[in-house]
Length: 438
Image (cartoon, rainbow, N blue to C red):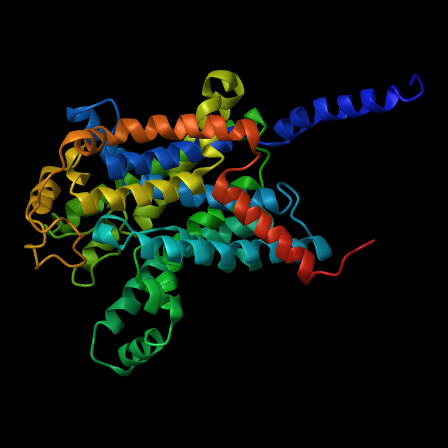
């Protein structure tokens, strides 16, 4: 028994060291920034928790578009961390990493399409971004071996050229021509388009978050992820540069607006309407214009820098938020399903909804002139009792649930439910696709 004692002690030391090593290698500030992104989506879809009036309106306006941009930008940061961080992988290691990223992309496509189908009741109120993520990952594969300079150039080019190219293509498709006919024929056999109206062309060029425009944010995330984010000097330069980028972009867009005149009062959520090219000069949320992308990128980098500093200085009090950030995919999917349930039972307008949308929900299905109308109850009724109470305080309840669920789950599991499923599926596929090495 005496001779056997050193082995368990050694194992215990190794077990004690693993969490510290894992935490030392992980940038907790990135997880905190992921929570900020997912919280912004909660605010947009459920309302701002524990607030009202001007505060709630201000939080919604600040989150609109920028939460999505932050979420997309952080996807690129994650890709950089998966592929060598500051030193891009090369050779066989890079090929293996690309295989893993490609498998992850396919799984995100499958999960995203299933989630989009399951949340069809949300109509125009929610566009599931997960399948777009899958396409972003696939299109990022050629850039994973580049250093920060190469990805920065590609990101800038995509954000400047992509929105204009997307607008021109959609203009061509709006006419009665052979190109539009070819697109229609392709969509008629595209499984993604038939299943959830999110086919290859929708995801890359035509829909709410087309890769032609938003891939630039992912490449910008890869660029930043290649830098030494533990360095205070790097963080300072990123912070100053990001603020300058946001200020210059929004100011330039506003000055151009003074020259071109006020924008027409039309529904502009989504890509720039082909009837109004002047929106290409605006920084409207979700428009995907170059100004919107560059301004949102500046905000996203600034948020990441701030989160890195806060996580370093106040890790313990921020730990529930950090843990929730590690399972952003799971929480995003849950919030989309909850929002669909709210709309079906008629409770969605009961918490933090703009007056115009509240009135629209009250009309039920009578607003036939609204495209992609959510599946509001036909009579526009509101639920009562416990269901009504839950819907009234959904923003607060879902925030608390997210923090508690993440804290409890992480006591027993390393990854969130969807995150763990994706990671395990990727590992399972890799083991069968690649020959086992000795």
